Length: 103
Image: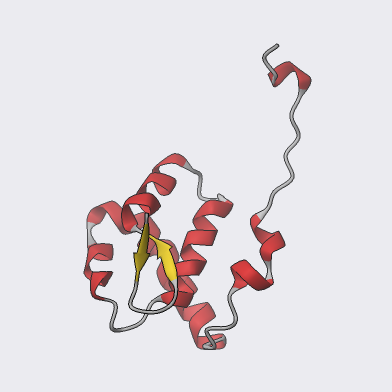
């Protein structure tokens, strides 16, 4: 599910963010993708921001706030979306060991 924040941008809704945060580590590229998409899409008119203050979203909020400060203040243009301009940063190379493959 996606959440429309009153702009042309759609971001994952907070239920999906919670699922990702509950099932991934702090270093997860999925977490970073969600943080970046929110940081670059939020506006003061977004009414659901109060939902971020719930305890269930504290880890996400802890990642989001510094990102908003760093990225929005240094690059306020909506065209500068890292998930588009820096797609490679959301990919990780993974090695699968033969011993990990069920035959």
